Length: 175
Image (cartoon, rainbow, N blue to C red; front, side, top):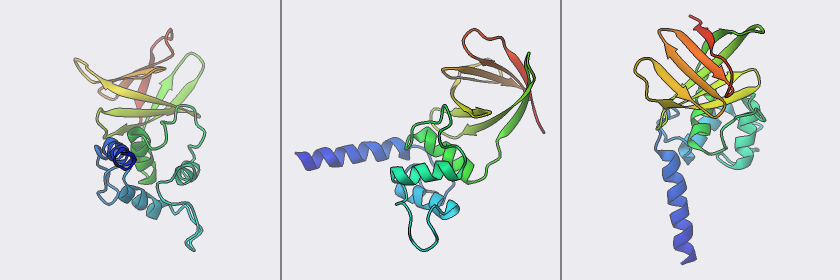
């Protein structure tokens, strides 16, 4: 009974992350092969075979540190499909789409990664804060919504709202 429960829980966790394919050696995101491909690209060890096991929580922490995102507010939970997709984009050095936003205080840069997950998600970084947004239905353009932010893009211009009662801010995509 215990053995079948362990096997079932392993199958559920692998299936949850394996639904999204990543470019790292063609391995499904979050799977052992994917973690090894990211490890080969980043190299979290000392070059002599010493370092955390690829895919372990310690390894995920080191990966976040190497990519400069450890401890950022809004970072998706380690091991989740969103976390793996974001790490994939950063490790592959996929450049984010950059927007310059004019708000009441000053110009702000918004870096956006559109991730090939199901459902489609986007991670926006403004300073040291990340926001995870999910694609919503829209008559035109692309609309994403998260807990603390909404983003609607149409023809290279975005309207962004940070916070529940905030006014829309216009943002222009950089070429």
